[in-house]
Image 1: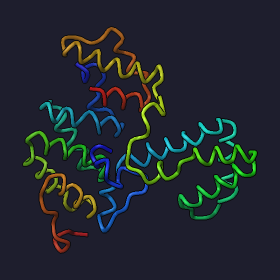
Image 2: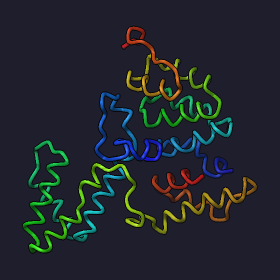
Image 3: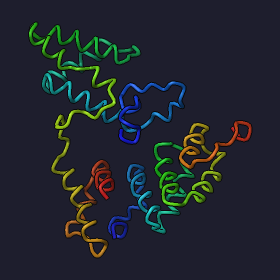
Image 4: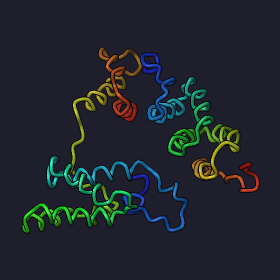
Amino acid sequence: MVANGLNSTYSSIHPVLQGDNPDNSFSELPYEKGFQTLTYLESLVGDDQFRLFLRFWVQERFLTSVTYVDLIETWGKWVGLNYSASEVNSILAMSNWNTWIFESALPPAGTFDFSTPESDDARQLALDFIALGGASSPSNYLDYNGFYSNLKVIFHSTL
Amino acid sequence: MIDADYNVTADPDPEVKQRWLPIGLTKNYDPAFEAAHTWVSTMGRCKYLTSIYAALQNSGKHDLGVQWYNENIDFYHPVALSTEARVLNISPPTEQAVVL
C-alpha cells in the first residue's frame, strides 16, 4: 500500500484504472485487504454466524456473476433476516463498507492481530540469524524444515 | 549460512524464491544469479518476475536485468514485457518486433 501511495485507489480493493494497464494495479493488496474485510465482518457477528452468512451468500448468488454491490446487498438481507431491528442497525452501521472497499488507508491500528506462536517463531528465527551475522546458526535452526510455505515467507520477509 | 542450512536457493516454492533470490542478487551472492536467471527464463508471471528485475535494477545491475529481459523477449507475454520494461526503465519492444 505504501508503494502504491496511500492516496492511490490501487491501495483500496476498488482500483480505478483510468486507462492504465490493469497489471499495474496488481499486488497482494486485494488478497490481504479483502481477507481483512471479511475478517472484520466476521468479528461483528461471530464465527458461527458468519459461517451461516457464507452459506447464505452461496445459496443466494450461485451461478451468477457478482460484484461488491451484490455482497453488500446480500449481507444486508441476511442481517435483516437474522437479527432484531436494533441489532440490524448496529451491525449495518458498523459494517462500514465505504471505508473497507473504497478508502486507500490502512485498516485502523489494532483492528487485527494475525500473529500466531508459529509466525512469531518464524520471525524470531530470522532475527536470530541476523543477530549472529553469519558466524553460526541459531541452535533451533532445524525448526525451519518444519515450516509450511507461509511460515517460510515470514522468515524470508524478515531477513 | 542460511543457504548452507536450508538449501534455499534450490527451494522450488516460488513464494520463497520471490523473497530469497532478490536478497541474494542484492548481496551479490553468486549462487542466486544462476538460480534467478533460470527462474525468469522458465516462467512469466509478473508477480515473480518483478521481484527479480526490481532487485537487479535497484542494486546497480540494470545491464544484467536488460540482458535477461532481452533473452526472454520471445518468451514473455506482451503484458509482462510492458511491466518489466517499466521496472527496468527501458522501452518495451514494439508490437511488430515481438514474435507472437
